[in-house]
Length: 420
Image (cartoon, rainbow, N blue to C red):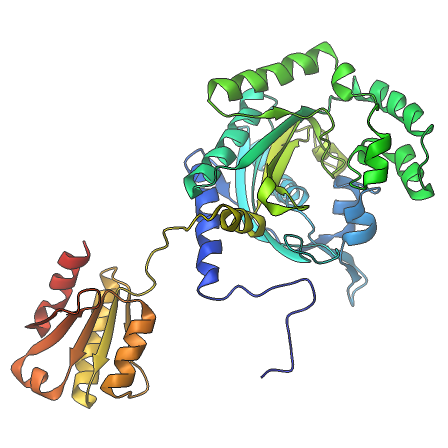
């Protein structure tokens, strides 16, 4: 046994469970690819200031959870704790917004890192699929992204998730609400850290999960009562578009999410089968983020869905994904000449798109057939010296046990026919 283990709060993806993660990633990405979103991949680490400015100096992510370090050259870098700031940085650096086709629609998939107390559904290394639509202020764009996430979850067979929806207002109406909320919070019995947070970004206090804090927030002023007419109209159009598309949602006046850059539309996907870590994904509009990181005004909207938590949600609902067979055909050669011939046929099968594997290591028939069973292959090819002399191979149906002799040169055509 190795003396090394995966770091605390992390995990290894290994077969067969890793196939579920791949299937979830593919299901989330599929509707995005069908809706004009192009793939983007950014480095696993960025300049610390990108996240400090974009995510927010007062957020737990920046103050407590970010893995920051200094390089030998003196650069201050951080492992990415989320995807939006990195993707927007990449789009600005590549001048994608100047190509004349706004919004720039991008999707991504990758690993993210936060130093948190490990628990089920919350890891220090986790996987997300995200989408960003950069450079357009349009309620239809907000609705599109929520609809695509809903479509992805339903394509996986998830049913018991809820969509929470809110508006955080904009630079016109939020300052008025901010003042009212701060006045309210100053009258509560809160610890020094929370009071300090209330002065920097009072909306973050609404996201505090501690029961004693939430109890005091029962009568807190609600942002929806302070929205300007433009934000009200914008939010109402998002709601109408979702309703027209048949996507159910719940209005949640206290939904703020944990990042500073959100404006107007904000939403969260929650699954009640996951316990305390119920959020499986979320996002919103971030119209001022580009300017925060030194770019031009580019109103944008996006989301990120947790692959880890989506897998847990599927397990909570008892949903078994239909995963493609890793091996359809398993080849068992008996003898050196049979090994050479059958290896050639396995290579040919693979070139024709048939998943095939081979009995390596010179196993005997009994051990090789056990390996064939473990592979999950539908068919096994067995080639011995007598078969070779007759120019045939034994094709065994692993489900029925039926065995048929077919010509060696007919292997590919026969299996293509049987496997469809």
